[in-house]
Amino acid sequence: MYRNPDSALVILDSLGMHQSDFTGNMQMQYLLQLTTARTKMGEPFTTDSLTKSLVDYFEDNGSDEEAALAYYLYGCSLIDLGQAPEGLKAYYTALDYVDTTKIDCNYNLLKCIYGQMFLIFDDQNLPQDEIWALNHYVENVRKTSSHNEYLFAKYRLVSPYFLLNEIDSVISICEETHQALKRIGDNQGSARVLAPLVYLYMERGQMEKAAWAKEIFEKESGWFDKNGNIENGRESYYYAKGLYELTTNQLDSAEMTFRKSIQSGCLSDGYKGLLAVYNRRNKADSVYRYALLYEAAQDTLRNQMRTDAIHQISALYNYNKSKEEAEMEREKSCRLKMYITFFSVVFILSAGFVVRFYQKYQKKKRREILELNRKLEKSLNTRTEILMELRLLKSKDYESVIAAKEAREAELTETIRQLQEQKGGSNDNLKDDIDAFKDSKIGQLFIRKSNKQTERCQANEAEWNLLTRQFCQDLPMMYKSFTNHSPLSSLELRVCILYILGVSEKNFYILLGNAPSVLTNAKTRANQKLFDKKDARSLKNNLLQSINRA
Image 1: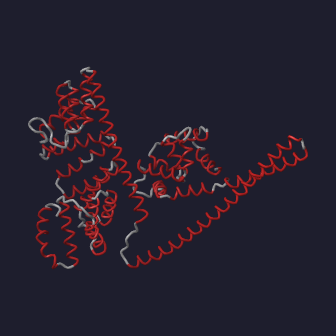
Image 2: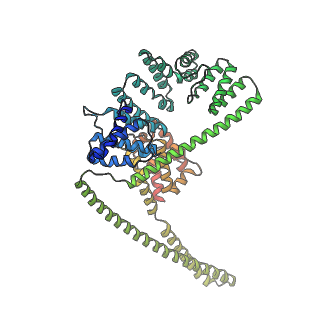
Image 3: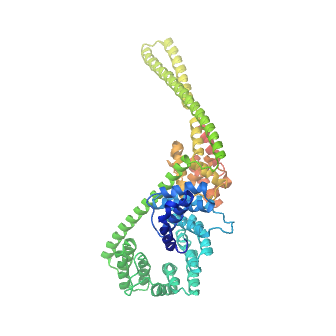
C-alpha cells in the first residue's frame, strides 16, 4: 500500500466482484483499504460521506491504527473539499490514535499525516507551525524511506525559513543538501537544490559563488531545454538569472531573460527587472513606462495576497467559532454517555435558570430606568414653568415670590442632578462587558496561553487580530478612547488589553515575545498618552481606576 499503491489498487479492484460475500466488518475493512489506495494514487474526493462513515465505524469497532487511518482519509477528503481547518482537526485526531511507543507503530501513516499538515500550514503562511510539522515529517521519512527521499524532505524546510527571513538557515540547508546528494551520486538532485542560492549569494555580494551555483543548476538540474528555457512552473528562476546578468553587465541577455519572465506570467518580477535594465541604460522614457507597469503589477499582486489572507483568516475564524460552540466529543462507552447526558441536563437546567434570572433582572432594570426618565421629565417640565414664572415676576418686582420660586428651582435642580447620577452613574454594565470579554473564546485562549496551558504559547498575528476585534466588540467606548486623539500603537494597545484581560505582567513576554525593555517603553508611552503619566509602573493602576470611575 505505501510502497506500490498501484499494485495494491489492482488487487483490491479484483476483489470487488466478491463484495456480496463479505461480512459487515470485512466490507468496511475492504472500503478502508480501497479508499487508501485510491488516495495514494491521487484520486480527488468529491464528497466526505464515505470517509465519514469509515470514521464512525472504526472509531468504535477497529484498532487504533484503523481509526487513525480512517481519520487521515477523512482529513484528506475535507482538504479536497476546501475545508482546510476541519481537515487539520481530523489530522490531529488521527495523531491521537497513533502510539509511537509500540514496536509495530505505523510510521508510514505518520509520515502521510505530517506531510499533509505541513502542506496546510504552508498554504496558510504559518511558517512556525510548518517547521513543527516538517520536523516530524522528516523524522518519519528517515524511518520509512530512502536516504535520498530523506534529504529532499529536509530540503523542504527552506520554504518556512525563507518566510521567517532566516537566510543563514536557508543557505545552510541548501549547501548541506547539495553536498549530501553529491556524495550519494545524485548529481541531478544536488544541482536542483542550488536554485535559491543563485539569488541569495548575489544578495550578499558573493558573485563567484552565485556564478558557481548558476552554472551547475542550469547544466545538471535537467530542467532546461537546449534553448535555455526552464520547464513550466519554474519560471520564477528567470528573475534571479536576469539579476545575475544585469550585475555582470550583460544588459542584452538580462533584457531577454526578464522578457521571458513576463511571457511566463511573472509580471512583477519581469517589469522590475526591465526597469533596472533601462535605468542602467539611462533611457528615461522606458524607465517611466516600466515603472508604471511594475507599479500596476505590484498592486495586482498585493490585492491578490490581501484577498488570500482574508480568506484564510475568515476560514480559521469561522472554523474556531462554529466548532468550539457546536461540536461535542464522541464517547466510546454507554456509561460515559450516560454521565454526559446527566451533566448536560443539569447544565441546561442551570443555564435556563441563569437566563431566566438575567431576563428578570433586565426587565426590572428597564422599569427602573423608565421610572427615572418619567421623574426626570417631570422635574424638567416643572423647572421650565418656574423659570418662566421667575422671568414674569422679576419684571413686576415681586421680591418675596421670586425668592421662594428661586429656592424651589434650586431644590428641583438638585433633584434632577441626583436622578441623573442615579440613572447613569452605575458601572455595572461596564463590568458586565469586561466579564464578557474575559469569558469570550479568544479571551480564554490568551489566558491559557499566558499560563502555558497550550502547546504554542506565543500568539500569532491572526490570534491578536481576533482578540482586538473581540475587545472592540465588547468594549467599544474603551477601544475608542485608546484609538482617538493620541492613538496607541499596536504594541501599546496589546499591552493595555492584556492588563484588562487580567494577565500577569510577568507573562506578557510569553504572549508578545518582546524584550522586557521594549515592553517597558511601550507601557510608558501608553501611560503618557492615556493618563499623562511618564512612567510604566502606574499604567495598570491608572487603567483599573479609570474603569472603576466609569
